[in-house]
Structure formats: structure tokens, C-alpha cells
Length: 53
Image (tube, rainbow, N blue to C red; front, top):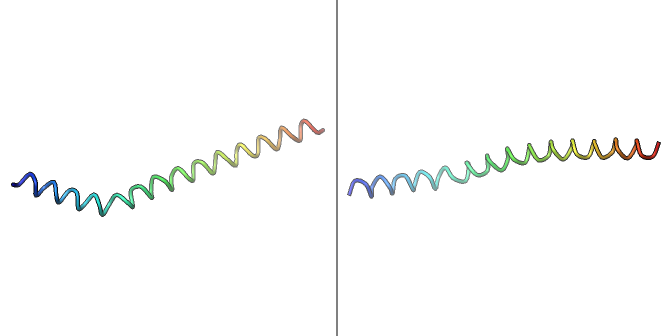
């Protein structure tokens, strides 16, 4: 009986925490992806300039 109560409590806690957890992960990855994208775009632009000049 105690183990099922603990499980239910953990599930309730997880249901409360999970959305924030996933939002945090997505946010962290978005920041990382945007940085990589900016670096990628900058490197492409420099390559294009080098190619045109």
C-alpha cells in the first residue's frame, strides 16, 4: 500500500514538474541552436565574400 501511495505522489509531482523541465530543455537547446545557426551564417557569409572578391 505504501509503495503505491509513493508512486502516486511521485507521478503527481512529475506531472507538475515535467512541463517546466521540458520547456527548460527546449529553451537550452534553442539557445544553443541559435548560436550555432548564427556562427554557421557568419561563416557562410565570409566564404561568399571571399569567393566574390
